[in-house]
Amino acid sequence: MLQQNFSQQESFISLADMRSKKSDNSYEWIWNFLPFKLFLIAIYLGLNISLNMLNKWTLSMYGFRFPIFMSLAHMAFTFVALAPLMATTSYRELHVTTIRKQWIGLIGIGTFFAVNVGFNNVSLLAISLSLNQVIRASIPVVTAVGSIFIEGKNPSRREFASLLVLVFGVCIAVYEGSGTHASLNGIVLCLLGTVSNGLMMSSIGRLMSEKLDVLRLAFYTAPITCIVLIPFYWKMEADQFVGYQTHHGAEYAGLLLIGCVNALAYNIVHSLVIKITSSVTTTVLGEMKIVLILVLSAMMLGEARIWTLKMLIGCTTAILGFCMYSHCRLAAGAQPWQPVIKGVPELAPSLSDSARSSLLAPKASRS
Image 1: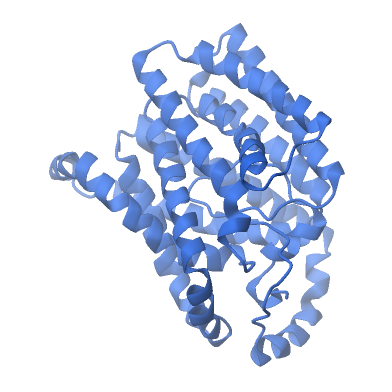
Image 2 (image 1 turned 180 degrees about the horizontal axis):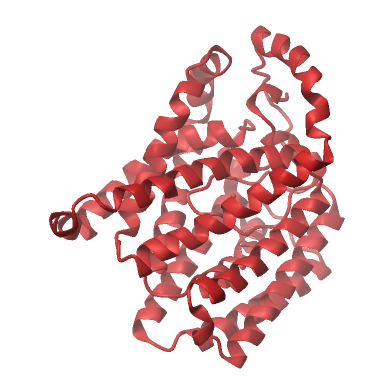
């Protein structure tokens, strides 16, 4: 699931951080140990896919039809679970300076993310996970359009061609999958969440002036996301949730907790995968992730019955366009700094090696 090469940055590495970096070097061999890398990549794919499928299963098949409450639970759990780590000396001395300088950006990112994850989870009530993932594969299109108007950056001819292929495939899949009023509402909500995510990526350079690692970003934005989502929960779900709890008790709590732990674990493992892998590996993983989710959702969630020939052609075309665009961006060199905060895993172009420093562990902050 933030990126931008900023010209002026301030280093926040403390003396404690500098001392700890010396001791970290003794463990450097672990990061280069091939079996460990393969194990971490397998965990990364497993957590990503399981989070997507668990969200869909919980909301649709299990019957816990409260997507906004589920989003709130994920964010609140992330904040509480990260609090002890963020209270340590190496992190604690960064908070005041970062929040004072970045509060506007953090509010903007938290708001964008609330719209993104909220609409995405609500859409899972009405559309299949397969269609959801195909629509969200169009995030690069929104990001590219946003970059034209916000940053004045135009895509290359190859990037433009790959985006056209991606849009064409998504349009076929969406048209074929919009057979009912309910699914049409889900498609619209998923598209709105995708637009919010793409705008967040393309405007992040204007919002933020300091690179933040995955965990600090999640910790700072989680309360903001909760504040934005609470009024919608109160208006749309609160009464029904009280009735659901009256009839079913707290039997959903265990399932919700598993989802919260899954989302947090994904954040942590994702930051480690960015640290130990190359841009090529990240690109391949992103493409594998889409295909695996589509296959597993058909096998395990019973979504194979909704697939038609046209929808299959649309999904295949969209994935092809996504792969083409990812490889175009990879060949282009340095990528913008991409927001990576997860309540739901995102599908987005890979990061280049030069952009990866912004997402390393907190103790490796760079000026």
